[in-house]
Length: 199
Image (tube, rainbow, N blue to C red; front, side, top):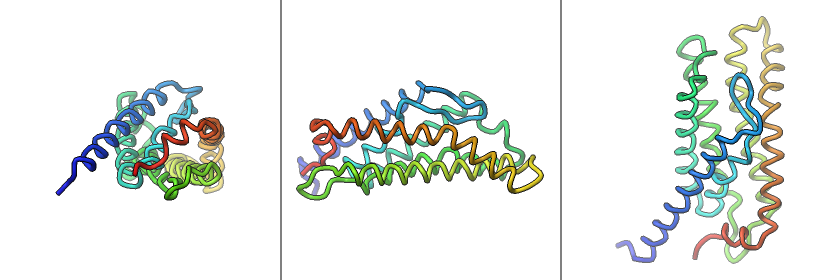
């Protein structure tokens, strides 16, 4: 039977995860700059979602990241810029999966940066995990770019270069900004304590 303490922990995780998802969504609406064919540099909008996995582990991290992925897809549908460059059903499916569902869901793997038992969150491990996750997100967008631009380009190399340069032009600043803000926040004992797992 579920104890009152476990129920309290679940409610706390649900409330804090909801707040972090809302914060990430708000930050995603405040881009530093937006790319003409989708993608933007934001004010570290991925960070609240990454912190959920660090704080609450895989179940909450992956679940929250998936919810955020659906929000990002919904936001793009409202803007009306999801399918306009896709030719055919396959391109649409790849766009949905590799521009929204997969790249934002992988943010949940931040639980690999969780604090070990009786230890604080490691800045170095956190930066490495976050860096890998954001690189995987870049690879997802790269796949979409290869699919979309490959429809018009005569050769593999042209689509490859275009996809790397286009997606790298916003994902690299996003990576740097996220890691800088993470370093700044984890230098605060209060934030570090906030991310420690509950007993």
